[in-house]
Length: 245
Image 1 (tube, rainbow, N blue to C red):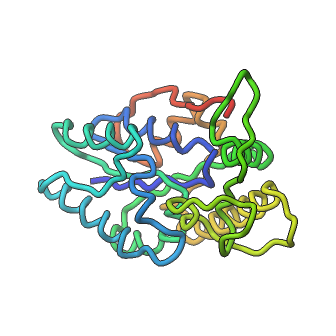
Image 2 (image 1 turned 90 degrees about the horizontal axis):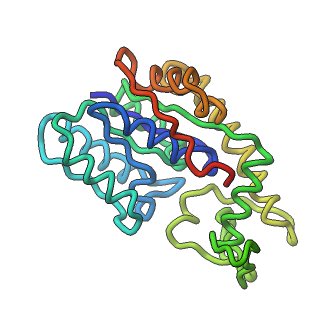
């Protein structure tokens, strides 16, 4: 059974990648399956538990995985997992798996890690809007909340809103007092893709970086699918979701 863990900083097409993989016969790929039990560091037991669940399913056992059911997409993923006549590939797509590539490959040597990369400025704008506006639009104007989420703080700070689920899934670092949210996102983007490039260089057969633009063309999607699920007949699907966000 193929195992795929999609990577990317976030706000870079990971939702679309999961949707594309789920159009393939026998494939069940989640998107951010259980962030409440994950973390940027020290979550090997959680990742190991997920791999154990995948292994049990591959062996024909119960199709059980731990999932945060608050988001409807995860419920849909669980329903797809149960509905498939035969599961030939399993996966999850989330930024927070990057630090665990080596650990996963120790357990599943054939695992594949497709990673998406979006333009830096576009990523920063998209992240800033999401964390500042909470996705609420009123009369075409974004509503400013009292506090802004900042996932990259080493400790809670006055003026920033704490997110108990997501903060631990990002690396933390110090920036000078008065730094803007965009400064933190830029530092994160640079750190993430520097680490991703190092990881891809260490395991070139298992980790590959794709530009977001490749999700918008048939040829690009074919290349991604062939890397994730080699030797299969693939189903094309224009899965470029959240366009313009």
